Amino acid sequence: MNSVGEGCTDLKREYDQCFNRWFADKFLKGDRSGDPCTEMFKKYQSCVQKAIKEKDIPIDGVEFMRPNKEKPGS
Amino acid sequence: MVKYFTCSGFLKGTWDQVFLAFWQRYPNPYSNHVLTEDIVFREVTPDSCLVSRRLLTKTSRAPRWAEKFLPAHRACKAYIVEDSIVDPQSRTMVTLTWNISHAYLMSVEERCVYGVNPDNSNWTEIKREAWISSNLYGLSKAVQEFGLARFKTSVTKTIKGFEYVLARMQGETPTKTLAEAATEKAREKALAAKEKAKDLASQAQKQQYM
Image 1: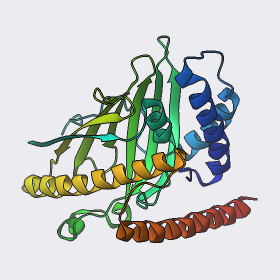
Image 2: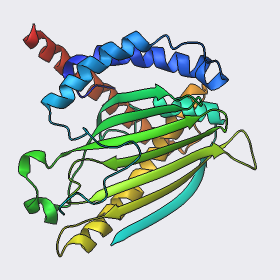
Image 3: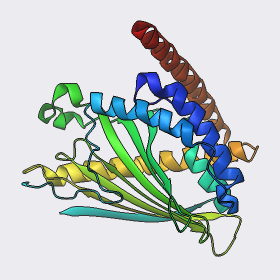
């Protein structure tokens, strides 16, 4: 699947592969020994976060699991 | 006024298969409307839950009668946030999904809870709830009706896509009628062509940057 940042797709796929392996082989089995994908995630994030800013995607300040039901002033 | 919808169902996979398939859902033959997918936040909490935020871009066609209310250039794309918590100890996953664009027109919020089916531990049950609201003066009721109808269609697609990815991971083809199989085949072909086109487009874009 493509990233929202056109130049980030390769970084994303690399990270996804790493994550899926870790998630299946370690995380779901209760193995908490370090996450091998941290570096890939950082690289991917620096790319995708830039794209989000450039595209003005209104995700900044959106709280986790807290959709803004009423926008202030509306 | 908010429209509320709830339904439950199950997937024929164990909880760990389903949770793994959740991250590998896209693309699938039923997800043509999903254009991009990104993880924009991810963390393992001190109590060993995986907390993630996924950002999706989807095509979003407004009903024709509503098109005149929409800014033309933004009418066909919507940004969706999907927050999730995976708890491997309790074998549950909670997701909350909502649109962060066009929210002044219509807001769709969906909450899903995945857990082991109490009657058959090889299956995973999903409890789904949705809230659909609109602040459009004078039109909110019509928009909500439209939103609810569309939400129901999209749930069917979501489940089919999920079943498809799950069956693929389990190394079998899902049981389906011949007609369904033919439709799926056509969708797969279209998907492959679309992914290829996207790849080519992004290659071209990259070359432009170089």
